[in-house]
Image 1 (cartoon, rainbow, N blue to C red):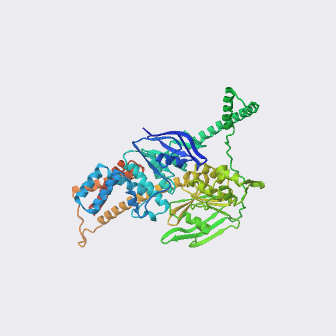
Image 2: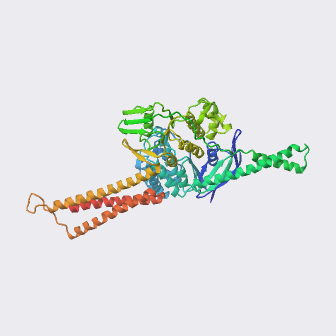
Image 3: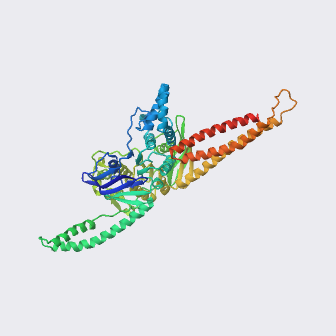
Length: 638
């Protein structure tokens, strides 16, 4: 089934053309990722598909039987609504049935309740309510009475994501789900859950993301927007890179041939008289087309790696017994660490665990409760935070950078100009002379990154640097950091970025505990999963052992009761029926426990809401049986 058909779309803003005469189709079941540098028109294309923007020319036909749902960077909400009320603003039959049911519960009107229950059954709203609870739980949204206006930016993003996923389940129509950077503000566990959810869900998806692991896990088609064109790639991110390289090599070869032909044709053009025959007019037209190809600029300036930074002394940065709490919440407890020259450290952990607090304490932005910090005299910090860039509205990009310095120092006394450095970070000449206020959100983020690096620090601190950065910029940044000779701290949820850059992990594991792990992020995650699995088995074993010990102790007490002691009650002997019941219970308890574990694993991996509802009902029934069995076992033993 064809969802969307677009033909010869063109969109410009002023003299800047974003894309020209692009055509594409989206079919049912497609999972597509869009890759482009910021400012290429990704968000504009999404808005055109949503009907929020109009193309300058071309046609978009959206199947009348589908709904298009957008998860955008900007979230609209009323501050006074609670999370539960915000979730219930969805306009769908199952949600309306849920609203009526909740209202009937409050009113206590039996007629209203009867009608509400009937609508719940008709629209399968019971399943939706369970699905909504599962999604909210996975995204760590627990207090549904909290006001939307009191939430942090990350919390708002997660609530909006929960609402969107619920909406795709609530509607029984065909849905095209459009998601713009859905993994921003999600911790790794949430990203992995969303990754699994989207991968298994039977949906049609158009996705913009900087997370390459997420992209590979979810999407099988990549659209590349570059130089006003749209290119199509089937396969992984690595396949896209390979195809792109082949295309650029072929283009360079075509340009070389065109340049040779252009030189010959230019001589002919100069020799021709003003009056031209039809034949020479045709050749003249061909000349201008050849000239266009010959003058195509495909230069990709490689990042200079031998830059000159301020010398690092013997002492870099040493933390001794650092502690920090906010009220009853302990973030750091007696944390000590000595940073070495050239060390690249990744800091990971759940949102709110204290990662950003540590970065602020290191730089003196926040006070510590106790401990000591020794910073080397030659250390120059470069801090890339999530707060964004401060600039004058009409200030041009090139002037903003030149305010720091006209040139950037390289090794051996060489320099590159501010304009050359900007080109290294994908700012073309036209953009360099544009006001900063005209840049897209992603381009401003890229300029902020450049602003930090251009100051030539020798100790970089990055707090979620990949949020809102496009993949081409991330590639440039990674190449820069891989060859950076100074020290580096990165807080990030981007698994690919962390794997490529860092070789040492500091993991915030809660209650002030920070684990020091040598290795990259994926190695840490594998190690943690093994540890958690071992701990879970150990806990399960301990519970079984405690139950067995309790059973043994009861048996021992029973066996050692003095038969002649009239002060103690005589133990009642089990009847044949009770004995058989006891034997059956002892056999069924471990079977129930094993089945319960299996259902829990299935729930964690399941995305189909009907199956989730069925499994949840099974789990509830089984847990009740298990509890009754354990209570009856104790009664029979006593």
